[in-house]
Image 1 (tube, helix red, strand yellow):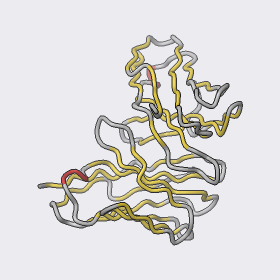
Image 2 (cartoon, rainbow over the protein chains, first blue to last red; image 1 turned 90 degrees about the horizontal axis):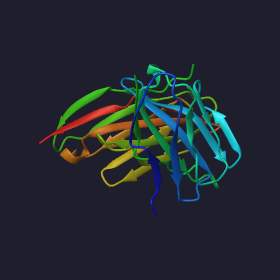
Image 3 (tube, helix red, strand yellow; image 1 turned 135 degrees about the vertical axis):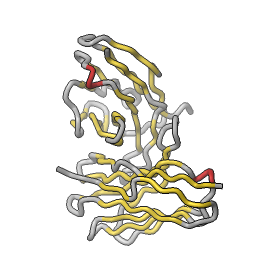
Image 4 (tube, rainbow over the protein chains, first blue to last red; image 1 turned 180 degrees about the horizontal axis):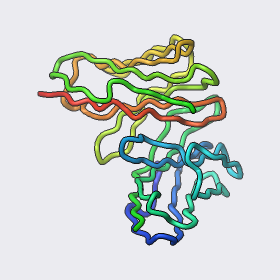
Length: 114
Length: 111
């Protein structure tokens, strides 16, 4: 049982490049989400999903796309990277049956956009 | 704009002291409140899931209470130990499962 895994751990992009941050969980959790962590701002929700085929926007969705084709995977796509997207990105998952359960976080991806 | 506020931002306590922090959140459209413990260079770890007004949860020396009518939750640590040093986060969850996190309370326990 690996929990929530994220790849890569570190990434450097040039402005305008695109990339996908991968997130997978093996706990059969319905709810998955992406956050960014910036100094002084705490964790901010980017996108979330309550099940395969269903996604919705969080607090800061602009510049990011997601899809949820399987229960296990929830990739985050940066369409055209900007320096403002330099941040640490966390993926998380929760069980949802009978109410939202405790949330498990992945180890994070540190992204730098130059 | 929905706001979740935590106070204090940081505090230092002596080993053995008891301490508490506050999380204030919108009282409307409330679904749940989660508390987390976040150590430097690690990922946040869930402490408590709280849903009902008047909820009280306990895990070892750490406990939490919830008042959804007035929009606040308290986290208590009894007999603080150096290993309790971490940032404690709360997150308010809306009826549509959106999470809004506070910026955390940074606790340092001095030996």
